[in-house]
Amino acid sequence: MSEIIRLSRMYMPTLRDVPADADIASHQLLLRAAMIRKTASGIYTFLPLGYKVLSKIENIVRQEMDATGALEIMMPALQPSELWHESGRWDDYGPELMRLVDRHDHGYCLGPTHEELITSLVKGELRSYKQLPVTLYQIQVKFRDEIRPRFGLLRSREFIMKDAYSFHDSQESLQETYDAMSVAYGRICDRCGLEWRAVEADSGQIGGKVTCEFMALAESGEAELVYCDCGYSANTEAGECIAKPTVYESGELAKISTPGIHTIEELAEFLGIPETSTVKALSGKDAEGGLYVLFVPGDHEVNEIKAARAVEGFELLTDEEMLAFGLHKGSMGPVNLPEGAKVVADVSLKDVPEWVVGANEEGFHFVGAAPGRDFDVDVWADLCVVKPGDVCPECGKQLKGARGIEVSQVFQLGDKYSKSMGATYLDQNGKEQPFIMGCYGVGVTRTLAAVVEQHSDEAGIKWPAGIAPAHVCIIPLNVGDDLVQPAAERLAESLVEFGFDVAIDDRKERPGVKFADADLIGWPLQIVIGKRGLEEGTIELRRRRTGEKRDMELSVATELFSFAKKHLMNREHGDIAMFEGLFS
Ligand code: ATP
Ligand code: MG
Image (cartoon, rainbow, N blue to C red; front, side, top):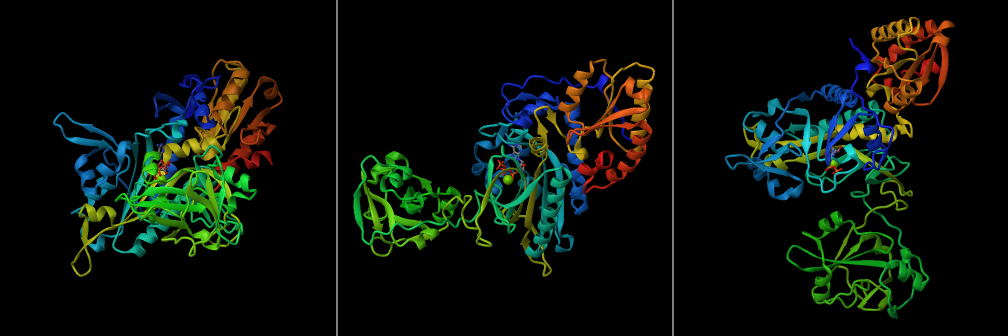
């Protein structure tokens, strides 16, 4: 049974002022509400109330993982470098990997993720196809030496992740687990009270091809999303881009003097045409140093991940390299390129028979540059960062835009790790096969902060009831009063009996201080008990989420709470609906 949290004995140094180095709501409020404290850049301590929230989120994650049949384990954070050499990521991961050396000169890293460790764990012991599929997970601390730790728990250097890994003998089996994990991830978001979207994503450092991110919608989010009413949504890092360039017809190739004009904006203004009628160029080289010039509609940006997919090892040219090739920044074009240069153009430019584009001559542009007549395109590829207003690749309508916080991601890894690390099982014919793998990560501490981004106001946090440090905070106004104090204690006890987590603000503080702290900490329901009300048998209920207040007879309230208890058991909507009945 839950215990009563007594605020007189709680360690909760709340802050009235906004901390100077915290610039978004979740960071400010988690500090102010005494949920967390900063230990060093990107490193935080959870104080008692924050730790209660964290534990509740972890439990939701645990329940949803267990429900999929995944098995909980605990791997070490400290990982030997040999494993990372085997997978090739010791070199590939870069400076985000926290590396260290022990007294015997052995290399280690503090795990940013655990694909290597888990693959070595099952290697040699998970042997037969008959044992598959298997999914193992842990809830554990992760380390990433982020270049810019910021926004408090949203991008920290030490954070808590739930990471799960699945092993399969077929793509179908992987797909089944991947789908089940995706459903579980949606439920985790729901139960934490998040408004979220699952989006098409890029697999980044982890590898694999099929992947999906779960985004908590928030203006402060670092990720940009596009979405459509038809249900399609994608991270702009990854989404297919179908731009709608417009055509400026000239009829023939004509060189135009454009003195001092270097940007698309200036060019469009100079010619009196929309930016969509211009073509933007970007130069780079492949792994062998060969020159590539990329062309995209003028109102779009090149997506470097896509560029690297179109041109192996693609890297942007430096200003010096451009000069060495005889290229002019701000007036590059496909006509009269240096010998051997390859032209890579965005697929949406296929619909543009005449381009307005640089002339490879300082201070000059072409209008009417026609692909196939004036120059050739070597490669057509999807090159652009998709943006709102582009065409939905699924239904053809216009995409809309939003921002989000990536709280979790699921990946189909295939055999990337099992192959490089030699982790195999015996198939039905007794033949060695590399495992087909999936991996699935929930940012537990990031989820906590994302909830605050979505559920707060100037006064403080508004925890969804399912993850609040306690569901109810009872606030006796006159502590020690022989009417008020026993009534508050009795109510607390009966609420605990109904299954609620209850706090009681038994501090000898002024009512104003208690109210301010209660709003800041964000208890979903406050019950104010004062002498005057009690004499008439009433208490006051305050609902943090909506700001609703109402007086109620103590006996009626107790009755209603026994009904509200039912919502506690209801995992789906317990969070929001728990106290609905008290205010309707
Ligand atoms: P990002 O793109 O935001 O750096 P990521 O895609 O590298 O994150 P994953 O490798 O997919 O992260 O890790 C799984 C989850 O761990 C993420 O969805 C996120 O919720 C969480 N996470 C990753 N990096 C951090 C961080 N620096 N601080 C807090 N949580 C993080
Ligand atoms: Mg990710």
